[in-house]
Image 1: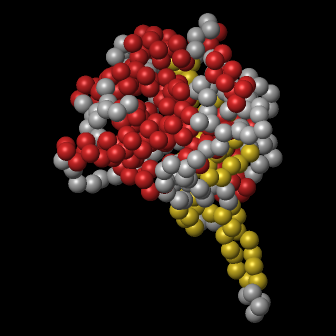
Image 2: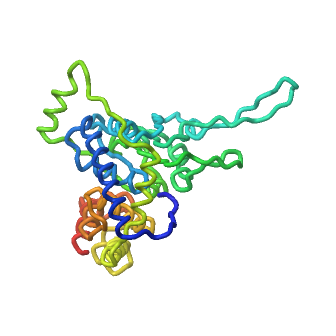
Image 3: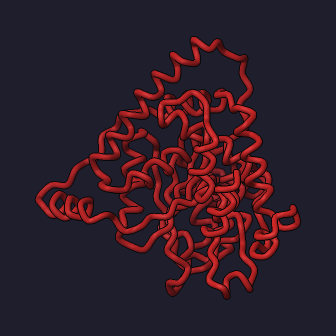
Length: 334
């Protein structure tokens, strides 16, 4: 999540005018993505909401569901400088962040020069992030939270905007490592990608096996994306929505008086989850053409925002209970 932007308040009239312009831009982005990605409306919506909110997203699904293609398409449509890292077991942190090399000039004087890694991009695609070791995965921690990296004691700022869209294979597959809890918490959302409906798969079959595939077109610039992100942070949040966020997040923590949670949850979401829900609810409202979020936005976002920030007890897992089941019950209670 990006640093809180504090600016002078604007009038309701200006807010409406800016929102209408932003909505038109978002509509063009949605159409641009829809020309390439078929039948994954919910996935596209959640991923775009994460980007509009200024955060990072973790895309989870089996191979072949267009996770990589979605990220590449978003990079083109949004006009972001994009880099891709294929995570493998032998990948090292320096392969992501960069490293210092020693150079010698004509006079024989030696000095170190920093060579930046692929993380210095506006949109970083971390492909199959859980194929790499936890040590390498953790190389992203500082960058995702503080938007800079420290190499040999020297701070190097990342471009703005900066977003990480990581793809992950289900943990049941061989050769995968669970992401550290601290890193999972840096992702604004976990977006689960399921198999497409039959009509969407029919369209995929017919439109991607010809001579030419549909190509993504750029419709937005990074500066404009930053402006929309700032507008979203200015949007008002009704008191009822704030109460719903606090009730939901706190009810997902053991020891807060919820019997079901105490029975099934080993540890729950922290305050970063409340921040994520607030930002994502604003972004989802604007995505739908509304100037303020509602409690329905919180219910719709509960699963993608909370599921990767919670862990079940051994007894709950043995009973076949899933985090989704727990979150769904909690969301109904707000």
